[in-house]
Structures are given as structure tokens and as C-alpha cells.
Image 1 (tube, rainbow, N blue to C red):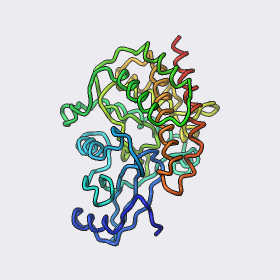
Image 2 (cartoon, helix red, strand yellow):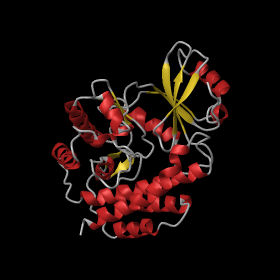
Image 3 (tube, helix red, strand yellow):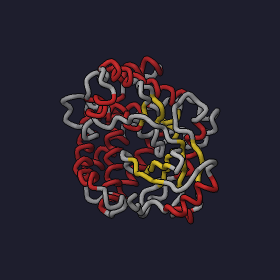
Length: 344
């Protein structure tokens, strides 16, 4: 077992033994790939029981980011609903245990489709992939159907002016984390700020909704939606725009993921994803390109933050995958520009 600077194994073993019923040290900790911000580890005890541990990245953190208690609260609130989430086990805010707050979830086992090859290997039948795509849309409809007040999340965030707040927040994050000037990021911000659509009733917004933020069951059901760190209350169409941005099709020039799973044959195209969401939710997607532009712009800023942390060594020694993010930021800014211009 290789040492990991994000894990204080002796203190964590002591904490697990006293705080988690039935945990049997010694424990093994294995970094789970995929997350771009907070770090997730699979934890296995000597009896073979498994959990997932979630903690912030290494190094200095922006004040509003990486709030473990908030993420834990969201999962706990959604647990009794129809939204599939990992069951939470415990939250630790005592930084003497592992240097930062963290929380522990039950380990949800199943395929995560991060690439086209993984999608084809896990689900060889095109009809299975079509059904998965439809379930992704239907699960988003379920998220947006949850009443925040009824599940205790009515105070999770302000309900009004979601887009304006997103533009303000992420432009501020850009100023704090950018490693260089990218004028198009600022230009798109100004254009989006001038034409904010009218918002309907606020819902829970996941904030980073995409296929590879889901754990599937072996038969292709959605077993758990993960990575809720950007969740808040606001305009549900922002989640739809984010999903469409990630939902790459064969031949796309801009692919935010390096080998998108949705390019595998069988997955519904973006038009079908949009129409299914509109049919199931009853919402008007006439201005959806605005939200696609917002998603591209926001992701550019998120990835600039990741690139900045990578450059500062905050993801540890084995972090070469982040090296390309600087170029991706510029391509996403171009994608935001193109989507905004489609609105006329």
C-alpha cells in the first residue's frame, strides 16, 4: 500500500474504529479517479467491508469551496427521496484526524462510464446504452422534482436570481484562480450578464450533472448520483445546459471530456436528451443554448482552478492527467462564445 499525503492512516484507523460501527482496522485507502476537485477514496477494512471517504484537495482552498459538512447534509437529505445517492455514514469536522474535514459514505459498487471504451465494455448492447441515456435524463427530472423545503434543504441557497449569482460567483473565482489572461472568458461573462433569462420556480440544482458522475448497477440502472459539491438552489435549466455540454456526439469539435462515453453507439443524441427532459419535466427549453453557454463558461473557470491547483502541486505526485487542462479552458471559452451567439 503506497503512502498518500492526503491520508493520515493511523489517525483515520483510530477514528473508524471508534466512530463507525463494525469497522475492523487495518484499513486500506485507494484513490478513486474521476473527481476534479474534492478527493474520494475507497476504504476497505480487514473484514472486506467497504466505504468511500470524501475530503478536500491538498493545499490552500477557496473559502466557499470544498465544504464537507454541506455536501454531507445534501446527501443525507436526499437519501429518503427517489433520487439515488450513496448512503451517508459519518461526518468528521475535527481536523486533527486527517488535517481537514471529511465524510464517509457506504461504498456503492458498479461501473462508472468515463470513456467510450468503458461504456462499450460494460454495456455491449446499444439498446442498453440507449436506456442508460434515458435514465440519466429521468433522474435529472427526479432531482428537479424534489421540494427543497420538504427535505430540509430550503435554506441551502438563495432561490432567486440563480444565473446572476452564478455569473458573479464564478467570475470572482476566475479572478482568484486564473493562471493567465483569457479575454474570451471575460467577454462571454459580459454578454451573458446582459441577457439573463427569466427564472421559473427554484429547484435543487446538482451543479455538475453528467453521466460520469453516476454509479450504475450491472443492469444499467442509476445506482447513485455523486459529486454534489456544487449543489445549490436555483434554475433547473442550468443542470440541463451542463448535461448537454457534456453529452458529446461523434464528430463534435469540442468535447469537454477527453473520450466521452456518450459517443458510443446507442446513446440518444442531444436533441433527444433535450426533448425527453422537456416532455418529462414540462419545462420550456427554448433558450437552452444560453444555459449551454453558461455551462461551458463555468466549466472553463472550474478547470482553470483545477489547473492552478495542479500547477501548485495540490493533487500530489501522480497528477499528470491535469496537465492538459490549460488548453481545455481556452476551448471551453470558445464553446461558450459559440453557444451564446446561436441565440442571435
